[in-house]
Length: 181
Image (cartoon, rainbow, N blue to C red; front, side):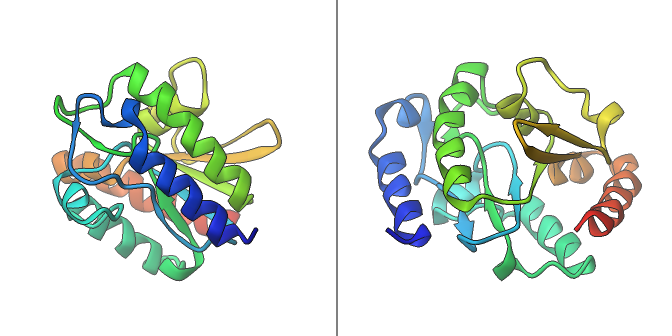
């Protein structure tokens, strides 16, 4: 089975998953991109625009993410973009059970893609991979290696949209990311 077919099979499972639907609205957003990506970006959960389209990072935060990727020479066609929580929570920020459940689907995707680097965009993305909470404002711009996978920690683009003081941090982190890639 090709990687593309394996990812499509996971997407079908996500669409049918009753736990993924519980307390959520909109279309499932399994993720998109290159099945052979060396870099995978992991956010939080779909927003309103994503829940309408079924595509990750297409709203305001997505436009910022895609702009930052372009600025460091990363093509959208070269990466994979996803979230641990695959549907828009009715209550806003995903809760721990949402993240823990979504981690199962996310780990399946990563086993298929086999990226060299996973970029964690914010606290929720960090929770999906690490048992203890990560302070993104303290750990940003760093790589953590766990189970043979390299994770780069940075802020979620939506944090920058809410708080402009984080813009320089995110831009600086993407410059560091370029050096790692």
